[in-house]
Image 1 (cartoon, rainbow, N blue to C red):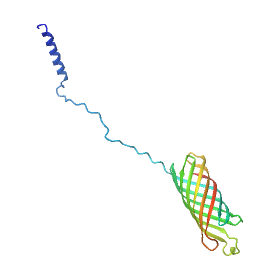
Image 2 (cartoon, rainbow, N blue to C red):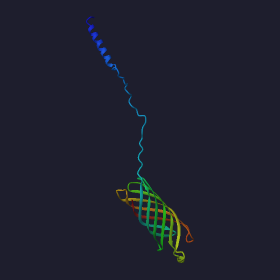
Image 3 (cartoon, rainbow, N blue to C red):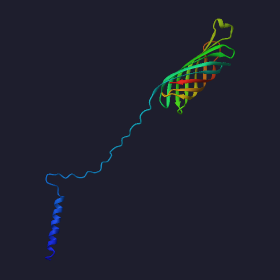
Image 4 (cartoon, helix red, strand yellow):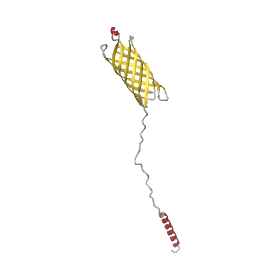
Length: 208
């Protein structure tokens, strides 16, 4: 037993040193280890809105219409101004037709109306347009010196498909289009009765 006393004393000394090392030094405050931070909420960033730009486009082409039991052929001009983003566009159109009937009587059609454009792909667009205007053509009767023109107001709808041929750096384009349309014609005098008009247009245009 006397031989174990040095070992017991050494063990007691080591235990005392270890306990003293675990105690904080005088004047120091023990800081507990914090729990891992947890997210209290999730922030969802809103996608930026697509940029809106000014839409200016026009075209020149030829038109044919069948109305009032007569054939009409003309040069066709149109200008559209509005706004657009990469997906859709909305504008106001003014269109003019100037030509002649099958028997050579000159006529004109002037229309105004809104248009709604859908960008199907990078080069293809579809459009729906509403038109309100007037049709004027020269009458062939003997009353031509007294009242040479026949007048009628029109209201209609048309559909257009356009394909970009050449694109510019500022999203402009040289394009071709095809259009079909329907117009209702209301008589403003006693020259002809009400009627319907079906028409088609082919044109070359430019979009700025």
